[in-house]
Length: 311
Image 1: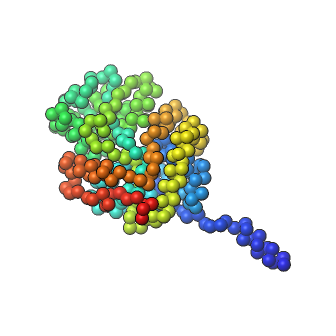
Image 2: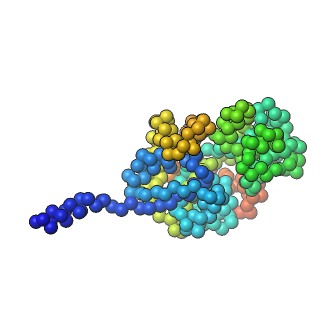
Image 3: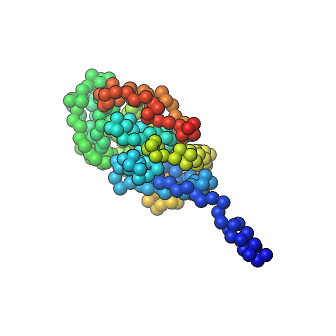
């Protein structure tokens, strides 16, 4: 009888099931863009889905998609525009979820500077940090005012976008995130102005997405991850101040005015349905890249993005 009681005690003490482990690589250091991931972790939503999630900021921001393609992580936070190009490069990647469902990128200028309209960019210096998609975006923005790329000077400022603008090293920067750089400049007492690219002829797109290797991914595990982040997004929308407290409490580095402002500005841009996607949006951006000369052929949407919950 004692042995039976001991056996029952061991069974009841053991967990009902082991949590599935997965690794998620971020696109950059933890910031408000990653709110649903962090809140899902802190509120126990991943655990509720039977997941043990390791969240890893990258040493090299360009590396996460390639690491996922190589099978060294389950998911990476990446960017829709880059995904199109990476697939054409032959990387085995697909979009499996959305984190931030609107563009954040903008062309940023000084509010009291010489650029009052895009037509004023002729002969000016434009800073950038990532070559490729930014050039395609600039070509489209400028062409509406009959300005060619050869009529401006492109300067690689690395990741010093707003500092180079505030120091008057450039007249504008492309690739600035409207939820960060605008706030950063305002805090430093310099007013900035964004030209929102989706209002200037660029097809709208999902700024931040989750990508996976379709050949090795566990669709069920990813679906559970997305269910947890969807629940976290709903919590954030319903409890913006409390969710900020939860998020900021995870690191002293997050507890400053810039991140607090960025949290407010990012909140309405989180994907409310992270698993779902607009196929037309992906088709339009693929066509945009082809028209811009960035790619030579068109991939069908099924090779770019999928809904893992429908698999």
